[in-house]
Length: 79
Figure 1: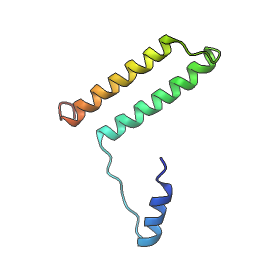
Figure 2: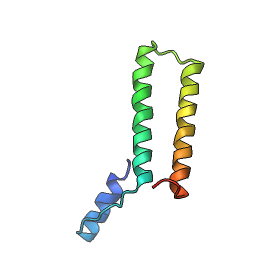
Figure 3: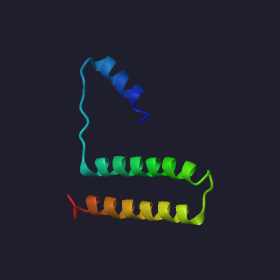
């Protein structure tokens, strides 16, 4: 996200396409970001645009799960 201009510049400058290596951590980051945004976009209208402590707690737990998973991937326990 936000890399369209730099990638376009490099492609126009060098004339050759380039590839981006994908890793397990990058996929986990993308899935957790999508899950967080989709969950929030569903929860807000269903709860009549009212945020409560429960929703905040769910987001914090979701973030902690993401952090634990990311640390396990980076320390080569998973993957």
